[in-house]
Amino acid sequence: MTSADSIWQAALGAIELEVNRPNFRTWFQGTRGISFHDGRFTVGVPNAFVGEYLARNQRSLIEKTLITLAGQPVQVEFQLSSGEGVLSSPDKEHNLNPRYTFANFVVGDCNRLAYAAATAVAQEPGTVYNPLFIYGNTGLGKTHLMQAIGHEVREREGRVVYATGEQFTNDFIQSLREKCPEDFRLKYRGAETLLIDDIQFISGKAQTEESFFHTFNELHNQNRQIVITADKPPWSLAQIEDRLRSRFTSGLAVTMQPPDLETRLAILSLKARESRTQMIGDVLEVIAREAILNVRELEGRLNRVIAYAKLLQAEPTPELAARAMRDITRASKCGDGCGPGDVIETVATSFNLSPGDLTSPSREKRIVLARQMAMHLLQTVNHLSLTEIGQIMGRRPSTVSHACEKMERDIENDPLLKHQRDEIARTLTKGH
Ligand code: ADP
Ligand code: MG
Image 1 (spheres, rainbow, N blue to C red):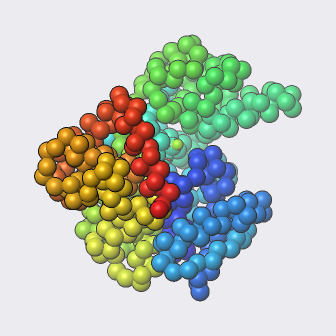
Image 2: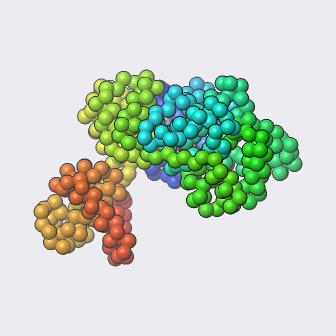
Image 3: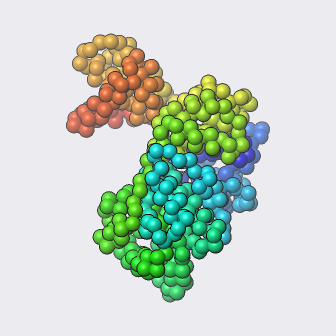
């Protein structure tokens, strides 16, 4: 990765939190950082249409984000990417990402079972677990593991077809429209190993489901291997037809969970090696310390720290890493006027108290409630960790945890309190 690109990856991490998901996918995916000098940042775009859209509609968000990262004025320009040399671009021929191999996959308690099942399937497709159904939230390595199976089977000259649920749907619709069911059949039913990623996409689409049902049966009857991923276990895919659901559960269903601290550390050091960055263990520990919900987020954090160090032309020390993560979390989650101090002040005003009351030891009912509200907002708006909130409020992390949980319950049961919370959050995220 070039340094401009690692900065851009960091910026994308922040932008992803600002725009909605379809927008992000449509306009930002496939962009990359090309160069950065003299305050000019060049973003590579896959086509002119995307470039025009971004220049017209997202320029200020992009510049704002880059300025936060760079700490200096930045002007952004867009340029057509040549489309080559991007490390993670899927290989055209068999559309598998070359990085997604077993060798690049870190095994921990969170994914051990899924990993074991995947390697077993890769070694003997069609015999052990058929279908193999891998489920879990987004960003936990489902696609990575599935494509690792694909790579390994391909190495032994096996015919692998990988498609997302979305592609499967599009191919199916196209085959109907262009009246070429044979092409469709050839592609999918000719597979020795069929990998369908994010199957939830086809749920509720009756005709596509039907077509997948037949594909599934035909392959399964011939002992061809089928691997499926989804964001939920088969029995929770509410919209999927019963007969498909029962097919999905007829093999093995395994889950993937968010990584624990040890696994996070191992993943970070692998990713640091991959991007050829020198990072001492202490730095990685700072990045790994906070829990995360998905691995992509973890990579985003690492990229931020790398970008930060490059921008400041400084060694990535633990202090620098801590600062990079703090600054970015704040900058990306809310605009100016939304630091912890602002939260305490705004909450105090809303409850007719003074900021000092909130951090005081007082057990007075109203103060306790306001204090819990502040902790809740520091958690949900500022995304601070329990430890960080504890430091600000002078409480133990376990106390913070209880307070936040209680506040969430109270808000759910008390519309007035919920209204008050929403008002405060609105004031905060608008900036004063
Ligand atoms: P999902 O398909 O579950 O949404 P992905 O497979 O796309 O998740 O993973 C997101 C990113 O995290 C990818 O870059 C992937 O390489 C990385 N990743 C996830 N789990 C691991 C792991 N255990 N070891 C190494 N990289 C991982
Ligand atoms: Mg995926």
